[in-house]
Image (cartoon, rainbow, N blue to C red; front, side, top):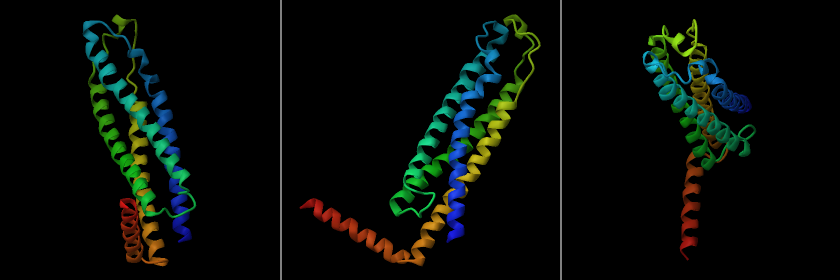
Amino acid sequence: MKLNMKLQKYLFIICFSLGIATFIYALVFMTDYQVLFGFEAKQNRPIAEFYSGKLQVFNRSVLCFGILMILGYGFMWFTRIKTEVCNFFTLVIDAVISIFVVVRAVLNIFSLREMLGIYLSLDFSYTHLEGLENYEVNTRMLDSGIVLNGVTAIVAAAFLAVIIINFFRYLSLHEGVKTYFRNLKKNSLLNRMRGSK
């Protein structure tokens, strides 16, 4: 059980760090593409649409994702996930947070791959009309985003598996899984009866 708790602690720290990394990534994401802002020439319309319709929209969603990750893992920190096995209530909340992180990270990967394909297909030969000479294609932020979100999805999924395993292992070593849920159900019914009086 001690080994599993250490694993839970380290995975949590990595998840929290990935939340901070995602937030920072969102803040610096547009730096490689800011030179594409404000294109007005007809030949560069696809670039302008890509900038405002894809890059900026994605950047805002990743910024929100990073903030939500920090808040979600901050809640877990508050419930002492680093040092204790969570109860059923916090397990459900932690599982919802972890599932959200995994799904959002996977969706981000699909978005980044789509944007990478569009970006590489754009014609930058008319950027001189906007005063931008010899523009070089730079996929660094898109590629690093795919890696960051891939790692995030894997680590968050592993963390989810570990907290569920630790919860049920703790129950089986102490009061037993059936007894715990029987008592949980009984207490829930008693509270409802008290509330109806």
